[in-house]
Figure (cartoon, rainbow, N blue to C red):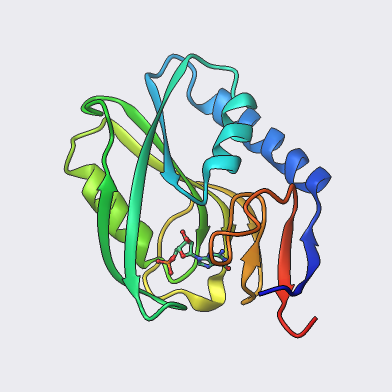
Length: 175
Ligand code: 5GP
């Protein structure tokens, strides 16, 4: 677990892309009643930077998920371990996720949120690994498309470590 970290996307590039996404959201959600839903834990860093790049009145709520799988792959069986604190009925929801990998987690999540009758639901994801798609999920605001590598940093962990890195990296376990 003490491997070397190779930088995949540096902090400056992340910040620049988030400013672009924030401006786009600001333009598209004028006059709307926005709730930003942060999916814990991985997207807490992305959410905190993204909301500061959005120049609109909005509220932020949090969801925590536990995904069952064999450790490297999610099974699509997802348990909500901590739910939203306020109803989202009639609201314009932007779900903020760290990474869409197979798509199983987000497909479940979006279906679950739709049942709460929001006015709209869109997805912002920092990363997408299209090579691993099992369920196609529409990402409305995407940070970066990446190849099939295991990413850490900027909120993403390996065994709960590395979330505090200010950049996105790949762990070289041989290193
Ligand atoms: P999916 O259901 O799309 O396969 O899984 C999405 C979740 O798996 C993400 O929210 C994240 O928690 C985890 N995940 C997928 N790929 C990676 C990765 O490269 N690095 C890390 N740290 N987590 C990942």
